[in-house]
Amino acid sequence: MFHSEKQLVRDYYQQLDTSLVDNIADSTATYIADDYLWRGYHPFNEQKDYSQVVALFWQPLRQSFKHMQRREDIFMAGKNRLPDSDGGVWVVSMGHLMGLLDEPWLGIPATGKMTFLRYCEFHKVANNKIVESAMFFDIPHVMMQAGLNPFPPMTGAQLVQPGPMTHNGLIYDESDPAEGDKTIAAIDFMVNDI
Image 1 (cartoon, one colour):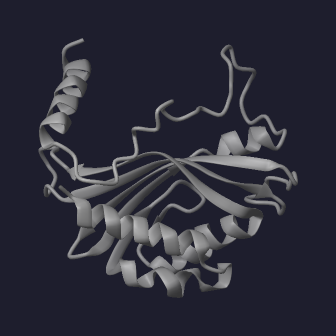
Image 2 (image 1 turned 45 degrees about the horizontal axis):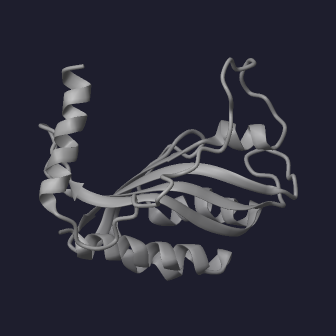
Image 3 (image 1 turned 30 degrees about the vertical axis):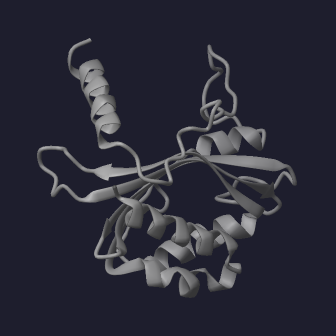
């Protein structure tokens, strides 16, 4: 299930991650719907024009994080089953965008060191296009890697969180819907009954 939606997002990532910085919008536009909506954090916020997403987020990020690589820990897809949703298909990718922070990004000074931007990105796919995305990313973690401390001292350990040891969170191929139903039931139990 959802193989075509997952493949569309994988193809989009392939173009996004390998295009020259100045060519990102042109090389990836074929995957994006005309009425696209992107939801991000401040200072990027909500964008309704894909070229703005590229100009405000992807190009500056790629210019600052040299030799950027996408290190996925989780990749899967499913239907939105929340009561007020339209039941659309969403593809999720979670992991780190890793590169050398060779130029400042968002006022964070360049370090010349390998830096990890933790992210989780959700893409709604309809009619073989990405129609909506929600991009969550950890700017304070990048700040800490650059030696800035935006928060008071922590009582716990701060580290780059590794993905699943087996990397079995990467579900590129078909999967048994019954396994997904069991997982959702376990999550619902934790949310509602524990």
